Amino acid sequence: MKTVSGIILIIGFYLLGETINTYLLSWVPGSIIGMILLFGLFLVFGEKLVDWVKGGAQLFIKYLPLFFVPVTVGIIQYDNLLSVFGVLFFSLMLVSSFLIILLVSYWMDRKVSEFSCG
Amino acid sequence: MWLILTLIVFAVAQYVYLRKKRNYLIPVFTATVVLIILVLISGKTYADYYVSAQWIDWLLGPAVVALSFPLYKHRKMLAQNGLKIVSWVVIAAILGVLTGAVVLWAFQVDNSYVVSAMLKNITAPVAIDLAEFYGGIPALTAVICTMSGMLGAVIGPTIFKKLNIKSSLAKAVAMGSTSHAIGTARLMEDDDYAGAISTLSFLLMTLVMPVLVPLFVYVLVG
Image (cartoon, rainbow over all chains, first blue to last red):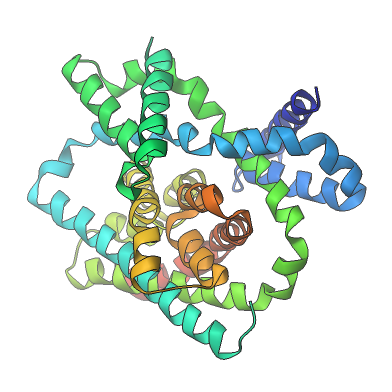
């Protein structure tokens, strides 16, 4: 029962976010607006609201990877992936992302342990 | 039809992943590969696939809204480490532009590719809008965002292990600012504190990039 109430509230905030996106803030995605608004509501109502939303939120987060599948399958639309430029371009993007995750985690881990907090 | 097939393929992928526990078997990766093969051999287009599977895509919106729960749950820790998180996200953002877009620019690749490349490490729905705004290619941007997301989700945990990275803060900021929501979902699996930091990092990334992109566009493209 509480899981259902959480799901309904979360979807409600998503729709609210989408509406605000359509009429007011076209440069911020509706899902992000909904997330920030729901976060605000959590700050106002605290633990009482957590009790109601927790089950639904955990369910959505558990299946988050599933929701990415349809967008990702969209890669098949780009057959220019197969050209020489395409291969070089996509490889560069992967190398760049690889460097960020590697260097940032490494540097930050050393810095953070230096001050021994966190 | 494709909707049900997507659910079945994902369920099988999830089952295999839970049995084997190998990073390269994460369901978002394996299920996508299997579905791409199925769509291609059935001779259908992505449009045919999407008509049916769009309901799953729609749920991505509410799922992003649901991330406000871990953010709230860990708000005190996040506030304490706020400055550290913000500064490292900015470093990650600059590093991303320098190793990606600037290299393309140096090789005199068309500006639309340079702009798209700048946006690869932010969450796809935001990146697509920004690509349109700054003269990138929206569809291409969506693809490189997804690729960056998958890269972190698949090899991120291995990198952390190899480099012996212990701090949740370091793992999560690196993951969130490279692989946005897809990487965050991977971290959530074993550590929801890290998941919360990662959520905050990818949110901050979407705030930093709209400031950074016009700056770089001005300097590089003129």
